[in-house]
Every structure is written in C-alpha cells, then in structure tokens.
Image 1 (cartoon, rainbow, N blue to C red):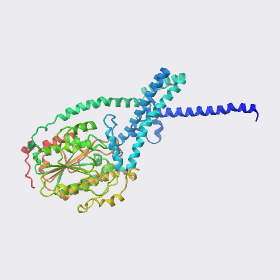
Image 2: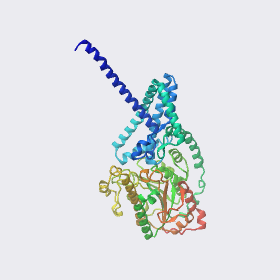
Image 3: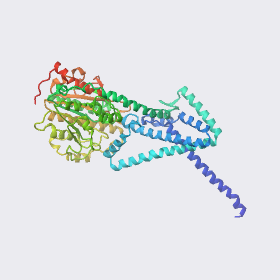
Image 4: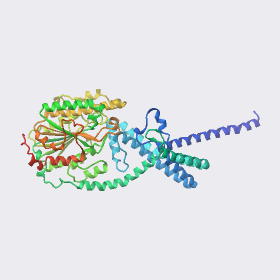
Amino acid sequence: MSYFTRFRRTPAAGNGAGRGRRAGAGVITLLAAALVYLALVVPDQITRLPAGSSVPAAFVRIPIEGVVAFAVLLALPARARGIVAGVLGAVLGLLTVIKVIDMGFFTFLARQFNPVLDWPLFADGYRFVKDSFSLPGAIAAVAVAIALAVAVPVLMTLAVRRLARVAAAHRTASSRGIAVVATTWLVTVFLGTSFVPGVYVASDSAADLAHDNVLKIPEAIEDRRSFAVEAGADAFRDVPGDQLLTGLRGKDVMFTFIESYGRSAIEDPKLSERVDATLADGDRRLAAAGFSARSGFLTSPTSGGGSWLAHATFQSGVWINNEQRYRSLVSGERMTLTSAFGKSAAWQTVGVEPGVTFAWPEGRFYGFDRVYDSLTLGYHGPSFSWATMPDQFTLKSFADREYTRPGRGPLMAELTFVSSHTPWAPIPALVGWDEVGDGSIYTEQQKSAEKPGEVWKDANRVRAEYARSVKYSIDSLVSWVSEFGDDNLVLVFLGDHQPAPIVVGATASHDVPITIVARDRKVLDRISGWGWTDGIKPAPHAPVWPMNAFRDKFLTAFGPQQDRALPLSPPSR
C-alpha cells in the first residue's frame, strides 16, 4: 500500500470515529430528554396510568414546565444558564423522588406523601418489610431506596444541563421549537384535547406537585396551632372520677381493634360473601350465648395503615391524622377512654398489644396500669408474617393472665388484633381453646400455609386472603365471647381502618364498622338514641360518625345523666 493510499484513508477512519461520537452524543441527548420528559408527565398515582393499548397515548402530553424552563434557559448567558439548569435539574430530581414515594403512599395508604410530617413512617415501613418478608429483603429495599434517592437528582441535574447546552448550541431551531410547542399547549388547553379519558395533552402536573409540597410547610404550622386548640377543648377534663362511667360500674369493658376491618369488608361484593357469612354466624352464636349487639360506622382518620392514628383518635376524642398530631397528643395530658376508666378508680386498665415489639411509652399516656406486648404475652410459636401471634392466642393469653384470674376486680382492656394485618398471609386457623397452650401448636400451621410471595402475585388472591383473615379475627372473637363471656362483659369491637387500595380500590371510604356486645340488655338501652342497628353487622343506613366523636358519646351515654334516666341493674359479680 502506497503512502498516498494510506494518507487518503486516514480521514475516512477519522470521519467514522467522529460519526460514532456524534451518534453516541445524540443517543445520550435523547435519553436525557426522555428522562426529563417522563419526570414531568408521569403521574404520582399508579392508578392514573391506563392499562393495555392506552398506555402509549397517555404519554402524549406537553409539559408546560419544560417549555417555560427552556425558554428561560435560552435567554440566559452561558454561565448563568449552567447554574440555573443545574438548580432546575436538582429540583426536578427531588420532585421525581417525591413522586415515586407518592406512588407508594397512594398504593398502600390511599393518600399523598407529606414531606413535612411523614418521615417517621419510613422506619415503620422498614420494620414491616423485615417482619413480613426477611431482614435481607428489608436491607436490600433500603439500599435500593437510598441509591435511587441519590441517583435520580444527580442524573436529572446532568440531563437538564446537557439539554440546556444542546438547546443553546442550536438557538434558532430551539427558539422556534419552543414557540411551536407553547402555541400547541395553549390550543390543547382551550380544546381540552385528550387521547385517554382524564389525561389531557396540556400538562402542568409537575408544577402542581411542587406547589402542593411547598404549601405543606405552612399547612403543617397551621395544623399544629389548630391541634393545640382542639386538644385543649375537653368537656370531660374536669369531671370528677366518681362521675365518670357510672353506668358501667361492675362491668368488664373490652375495646378490641380488628386490624384493617373496613366497611368494604361487609359491602364490597368481592369481599363480603365470606365476611357476611361469618357475621351472620356470629350473631347466631352470640344470641345462643345470651348476648345482643348494636352496630354502626365510624370514619377513620387513616386508610391502608397507620393504625396508631386511629387508636389515638378513638381514645382521645381528637382527630389524629398525621404524625405531628400524634406526637403532640401523646406528649400531652389529654384524657383518653382508658384514663377515664382509671380516673374513676373503679377499674384496672390493661393494654394487650401483640403488635408492640419495642419500648412503648405511649402506654403511660393512654393510662394503662399494665401492658402486655409481643414479649410478655407468653407466645412461643412462629410469627405469621407481620403478625407476631394469632389473634386467638392473644385472647387466650388475656383470659389466662387477667380475665379469668380469681379474685380480680372489674377490668377495662384494650386488645389490638394483628392477624388481619397486611400482607394477609399466612393466616392461622382456629384450634380448641384447650389446645392453644404456649402457641407451639401453630408451628405446623405456619409451615403449611401460603406465604406472602405466593399470594401477592395476584390481586384477586390478595383480596380473597384479606377477607379470610378478617373472618379468622371475627371468628376468634365470637368464639372467645361464647366461651368466656359472662353477664358483666361489655365488648366494643371495631376496625381501625380500611385495607390497602389493592383490596378496596382508590376511592373507598374511610368508614369502619363498630359494634357493642353485651348480655345485660340495659347496657344497650343506654345507646338506643344512637340509631345503631341490631346485630354485629351494621346495616347500610346505620349512622356514620367521625371516629373522634366516639369518646364523648360513650362517656355521655354511660355517665350520671343516663344513670338518672335509665338505672342499670346491680352487677351480678
């Protein structure tokens, strides 16, 4: 090969390398554009994404935030442009992280993430994954979350800076393109153009998300002030102890929370067939044992999770729908239902909390004389995913330690069930009360039952197992009342919140059933004015109260005013 031949081919090789670099740069620019575009138009709720063939059409959108941002960037000098592009990219990256978190919150809690108040929930989420699946799985989930939280803002910053440089290098074409896109956005706004129902081509969702999250800061400050006013207003704070709950003297009063027992469990056709049969059978068994019941509905402050918010609302008579309110409540001196029983000096107060696996100082706030938790209930069987022990064991342990203890006085107890907690697998089965023992009998049940990984492959199976778990919890409670209940028992049982949207959908109410069961008919006569319906299943037309209304209605119904109007029979103890 001659010198000249080699000389002629060298530029050809160089041109090929240059074309490769330009092609690579073009691909990177396209990826950057796609990343920014998706960050601007993808919704923060999975349910807003259409299914099937509509998916591509749902992403045909014009994000006005991108149009405005690049118009501003083109107008800036080079140095300022780089700085502003970096800031905008970082902000968009943070919004994208919040959007991903929102997806998780809407999926499991049916609400948006609050970046001011919700940080403590991440620790609860870690514990849930660890207890429901495995410690390595929880650690892996945390590692992935941290990696994404760092990588997304970094990549978004690099992407916006790159697009800003490319746009500036082609200023004329970019300016014309921005003008065309802005005009198209205005036209689609006026026309209401939409290729998918509810998903409009003209988009400003990223701006809305930023606006909503910025507003949460002053909203949190105002909410703190409002809560202080609400918590300070207490009609029963100064009532002497001997004037509290006089209509229940000598009775054993049990408040029992059934985890995730929501209104949908008894009214949604996908769920109610199994649960309704259980409630009907429960009515028959309770009637055979001499008990009657009245039922209604309460509206919970939470859905999908956050049981402690519902417990605090029910106990305190104040609406507790976020962590800030909860922390303020439990650090104060607001009278709870439990402390009202304690103030009367007529009851010993007991908390039975199998879901508590660590120090629980809130027990002192609520006013419990004694608290039994996952470590002190005497359980030596296996856990059932998140549930530390079966509800039947919880009831039997309470009976052995407190309810059937010889020579005791009247009890007020709060029991929190856990068997119907997410992920609703595996689910225990009832055994004879004389077989419960220390819980070892559940070992074989747990080994042979379906595991969460199997159930959660199919949403229909998740719903079926949820209904089965609620059936188990109700069966356990009805069986316990039939076995151990006497003339002095007054049982109040209720749901804490609806289950996750995967079970009930994104638009389900926050209502939960509540029931009072007693053998002494005069106990139920005291609540005749409430309008509650007969039986342990509330009728569709049964009254619906906000959950924070229950405390005052209960204290009033069983207070001295009702004593004078409707005296109770002497206790039979």
